[in-house]
Image (cartoon, rainbow over all chains, first blue to last red; front, side, top):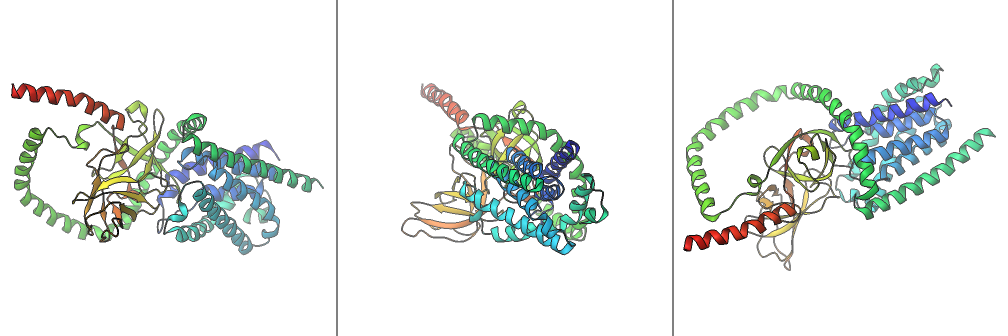
Length: 168
Length: 297
């Protein structure tokens, strides 16, 4: 694993954070927005070695925590687990585009549910919101739509050479 | 074999990072945003604020353009409605001018100043927002502009939005009242019932509860801040959504905030904190006494 790919991964996460907090969150439908940072972590974790992938997830989460008002470590915890889940399952799902889509939705759903549950345990009151089910189901669906662009773009940026790998 | 070793190391790393995350959350909650965690937050926000400001400068016109296109069909109706409204308002202007003079006169007599008018204001641009589960947002004004942690924030119509929770030199973070993580807002009804308004995280509905209630509340009644350590008295907050009556002295119903949290571009920070309020009160009381004595003399 070259250091260059890790640096590119970090730069992509930084870009995703800026776009998430300024653009993506404003394009909310039914009060729910896609999670570009989560998606970027999934996309990068598909292409990086396991350890850098997990560290990248943690870094993305901790930066988002520092920029928001949620307890420091909440998103770091969730994105670390999301990166790890991606690393552990990527070989099984990356056989066709539908299975990949299913995996992205599943991992994004797992991450969103984890964010809501752990956030509630740490005083965020997320599960008290009457609209939480809508948020939990729609968020990953939007992520799946955004994945059509983000996954190939991140694969390209991280220097994947094989055409089939880039497509998937 | 190498793959297996790498995978095992990733699992170990995961366990370490999960533990670090839980420890960080516990420390952050116990420190209430102060200490080392607060310093880290300020550092990250100082780095990202210029990037977010630059991105917002590009994104805002594009989003406004898309909004304008999307709303094109409704603009003609909106225009006609606004013209009719202007006509109505012009008719009422004369009577309002008379009432304003009367109110100003009564204020002078009672030595009262509304909360929003007695404190300095700082207009700010929203430069970044949290995600679906984080209702907080960031503005492009900070301590160098006189914005302090604890300052209340209102929208351009004067409706309460939230409170400043973090402030660096050039930016600040606002926690809106609709956030489930925000403290409840002490509000009162037109009949004088004082209760607490709490966010659920959803924009349109908040919980309104009055302990020791004596009178019912009715839909559409205005709720204003009743004065507390967090907010000065007299700021419009929301409207009662459903009628509610006291049951065993307790009243529970729902309300909607006046501010449109999803469409905030500009906000106004009120340079008020409970400490400044106390200082003002402490310095005002002797003056009033002196003035009264002098008058009597």
